[in-house]
Length: 320
Image (cartoon, rainbow, N blue to C red; front, side):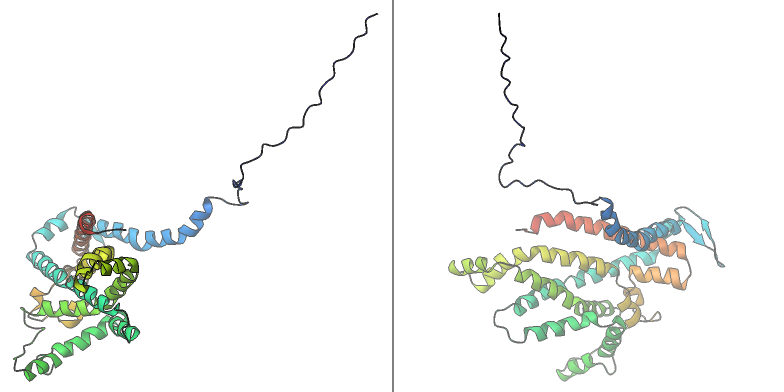
């Protein structure tokens, strides 16, 4: 009789989860996490940009193709406003005055760099007081700045002419002389914006590592050599940023021209800027379509110059 012995069945080993490498943590999804939360936080900013920037730009472009009626309403006229604008002799003068003002305003950049370097000197006493004094014009109302400088430039009792007379130099009526009015206004613009530029350059200077300056000292470099070979190249990103915002601000100058001069000023043809031309067309002549064409032309000029600046910065801006 054959006895069949059943084969021993090996107990099945209970499967255990594979051990994960030490140091690797399993990423858990936060309950309730959703990409829609990004829209919740970005929504208010995006809505503000759309309402206060994008829509006005589109609306201005639409208005530039219309002609406003004397009692309201508008008529679609296509590119007639742009054709009229390109034939306007006042446009060339306004573009020339704006370009001259912008070039003069850029002189404030090296001035601000020099002042910031002096304020960054180690051991300088009263540094906070100097910063406050330079920044006061930034927080001062433009109307107050214009009124004060009008008194300084006054040809009869101005402080500037009195100071020049004290050293034997004959003064002049600075704001009514076509040869000096634009330069006088540009000087005020440089003075008013100096505080912002100094603060930006001070932040850039304080970001330069001390080890680089110490290495230059060990190599025997003097203060002038360190300034032009180390400080300026490492400060070039800040200089680039200030140059971009300075050009944009100078191309939009209006308040100083409007408040320091009058419409009947004999120097107005030599100081009228593009924005002032927009003001005359839109608010004095009530020609909204033509004013919108002027505004959109200025927008294109700013856009082109900004693109050119960003292209050229690759040749002289040094990033760490």
